[in-house]
Amino acid sequence: MSVHRDSQLDMFAKASPATAKAHGPSRRRPPQAAVRSDEDMARVLEESGNYRILRKLAPRPIAAVRRPEFSRLGVILDTETTGLNHRSEEIIEIGAVAFTFDEDGAVGDVVGVYGGLQQPSRPIPAEITRLTGITDAMVEGQVIDIRALSELIEPADLIIAHNAGFDRPFCEAFSKIFANKAWACSVSEIDWSARGFEGTKLGYLVGQAGYFHEGHRAVDDCHALLEILDQAQVDGERPFAELYRASQRSRIRIFAEHSPFEMKDHLKARGYRWSDGSDGRLKSWWIEIGEEDLPEELSYLRSEIYRWTEADPPILRLTAFDRFKL
Image 1 (cartoon, helix red, strand yellow):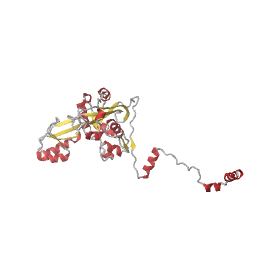
Image 2 (cartoon, one colour):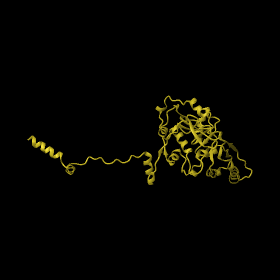
Image 3 (cartoon, one colour):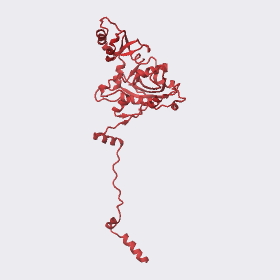
Image 4 (spheres, one colour):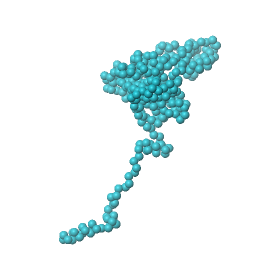
């Protein structure tokens, strides 16, 4: 019997390859596909024409040494607040990114970053938490470090905010370190439409530029804005160079004081805004224009609104040190 079993085992051991294949599947591994990098895969998808890829914005590192050719200092600043009125609401977060630039508006390096939370005097409204992600638990016991923030703000040649008309009043109410600083607004002082953008909200600018970021947190928004301001254009200057040039020009604010009540719709349609006098301005309709547009605007007011050639509406000349205060 033992001889018979050995003969059977020997028979299977000597089976031909064809016989073995018939008895079971091959164990040969299929060839592996070449491993592609994330960028390779993104490029394939983009080149297909059926996909648009958004890349995550990565903050620029802080430079160890300031390059002497970039002698100017700018600070991109963003605030998160408990509401819209700087007289009654409070800052709950400030973010700041300091960077160097030159006389032509070319951006150099990031040289400082600050981000801090602050507990307000009353609970954060639910809608603010939904918008920003900042909760009462996050700000409990937190205080913004004025000394650390001052190290960035005090030497700054220009403070940039994406809607400076909102951020500047809050910041000046918060601390005197923001007084007597030059401000620029990356919403109103850059012609985004001419650059091919269809909106001015930061999230939209970031998305249309091909990126995404963690929005509505102050430092993240500052880093994102810097990238958009320094984005290369197909032809023409970068957005920050346009912004810096605009910040150096004077602006004119004209108050259509004592204008006839029935002319209010005409003024509104032309871009005038109403001030009820509670914010320190004259109680009247007003508009802000470039200095070069002053003769045309005076002619419009005298011929279409007052209908009196000698009308002399109040005029206020503004620089970057005065603008966006209120």
